[in-house]
View 1 (cartoon, rainbow, N blue to C red):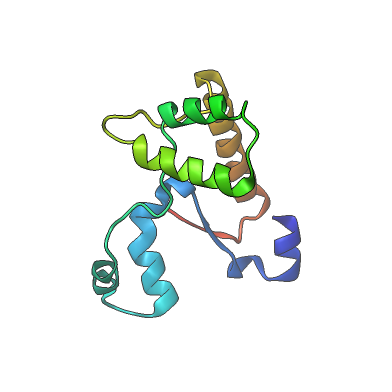
View 2: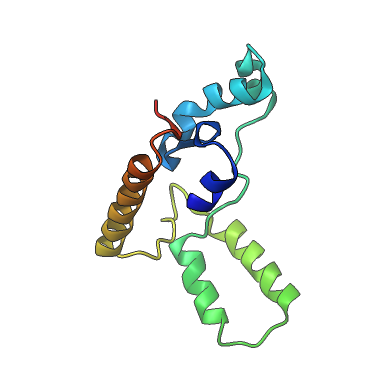
Length: 129
């Protein structure tokens, strides 16, 4: 953050917490596009998953397949097949690489980082819902 703040006025920097993005999306798009009716922009794009997540079942199958040597294209095809066969969702639990304690540590660190930026760079605008 210090490097970014060193090349521009802090007042030109706007940040938000990742978890607030959905609630801030309309305001951000309106600001970036100068459009007053951003809902029309949202309506023009169907809601879809652009990057599907691996399910726990798909990840388990992928780990087992790691024992078999294969070329990069074969592995990519396997991942795509597993995404289609075992999609994360209602029937398949999403793969989660973190244990509960690790998640909490990461969340605490993220919260501390955000607060540190707020303290060290008071002129940066932080958006919140």
